[in-house]
Length: 181
Image (cartoon, rainbow, N blue to C red; front, side, top):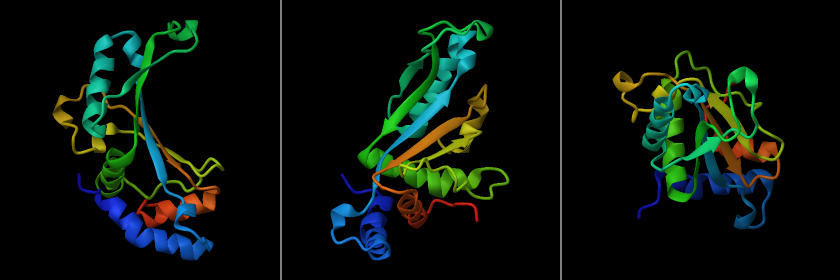
């Protein structure tokens, strides 16, 4: 299997820049992306099971991998929610699928967001991981807009091996993530 385009860029261009910027003595010290977690909420599936199936199918198209169904941990009477009811779908991407998804996310999907000014650089969690949300899942070209009955949001978490937020920011910036100025 051939390496993903962004992984080649990471190995050939980003690793030397990171080694120079942070004075790493060994290539193994360089932070890298470990995994990407994509979560799609579908609380409306309580009333209609078809919404969950549609979210599941859309996330399969977007990620190229079968997601797991997330269930409610607590019962909430105001939302007519019982413990164990399905409330969302999530997928964890690693290795080649992760790099392919990252490439499509940064170069195709994010620029298609309406009135896009860049991702918020404050989305780091002080452990080197970056979290952000997308309001419309239809920005991905794999989704057929005409067949979508409900536009859903997505939460994306990019988990890195960076020790600090500065290292993770520099890593993602060099990989092409468009941060706000």
